[in-house]
Length: 91
Image (cartoon, rainbow, N blue to C red; front, side, top):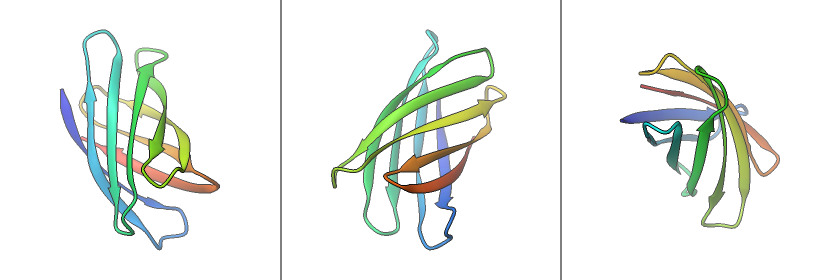
C-alpha cells in the first residue's frame, strides 16, 4: 500500500511531500522531497502492530531517523534530518 506523506521542519521554514509504501511483511520505504530541494529515501519496519521506525539518507549527504504511529491507512510521526527535527503525516 502506498500513501501520500506531508510534513514540515519544526522551525516552519521548510515543508516536504512524498510517499510511504508499506508491504505485508511489515517493512516499507519512504521517499521525501522538500521545498528546499532535499531528496531523501529510506526504509522502515513496524516494531509493533501500530508503531514503526526507520532511517533515510538524502542526496545531499544528510541522514536521519524517524518514528511513527499508524492506524493502518494513516498516521503521524517525528524524525530528524541532520540536527533538524520534523513532523509528518501520512494517509
